[in-house]
Length: 344
Image (cartoon, rainbow, N blue to C red; front, side, top):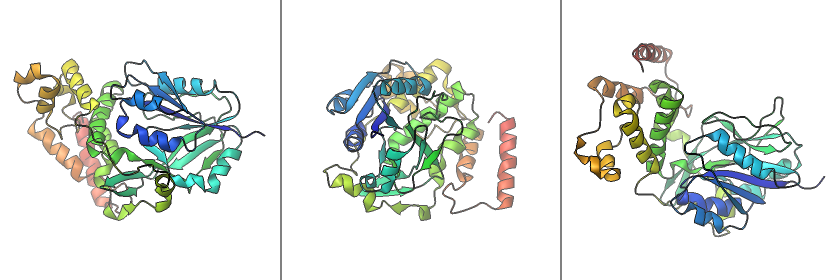
């Protein structure tokens, strides 16, 4: 059997802050890298065009639709002849450098068609030149030994690759997928503010459920955080790839998009979401100076603010180093039930 090609599928919208690093690393293991760019204005396209393995396609969707962009990427990959292993990664996700030496890479290359590849997803934090990480208890299916299976996914946070019923799962234990979303904490917070608004509008999700899902980072025990092992990055740094610096933006596109939601639906619709950790009046004055005379932009009541403080104080430790008592869990569930009856 001939050796399969490795094809990386990546959606991009204004990812210049990390795209160079991502493409340098992915170029070491991928035969083809397909970038679906959704109207980037920050130089992402120019960066992508410099890499010979990149095929750049246009995602002309106006809003977020994972099914549209995944189908687009998959269709482009399947135009490449021959057997293929597909990896669907975001620009802030980088395989650990031990893929260069791990026998697991050979397991991927010899896996039969229809195999789904699962991987652990450590969250990477950057403190000057030091990298640390922690895990959520998640195995992420990001790879697929292509057999032509149909791919169906949901609007947001859906499966990235086909997962046929009864498919064999190859779970990697040595090779990891480093998630750099916490490298720029301002970007991370901006993005989860937008996610909450998007899901509240489009999926009608409750504020409490959105808080619990998107604010896990607030309650990770220091005991769960460790220094990134050398084998995760050495193979890249030895090839001159910078794995620790961070290019932070002065402002983030998600903040403008949240302000657009306010303009379209009114800020009051979002008052129960945990998005008020920034001064929206100041951001409005920056993005829309013509509206600077409209006064302070925070429709929350005192009760809303109290609930937000309670949510933060009652967030469970997702790193599994601390378990609330049975009485505490029962009390929190009772409070949540009352809040849900009030529209939370």
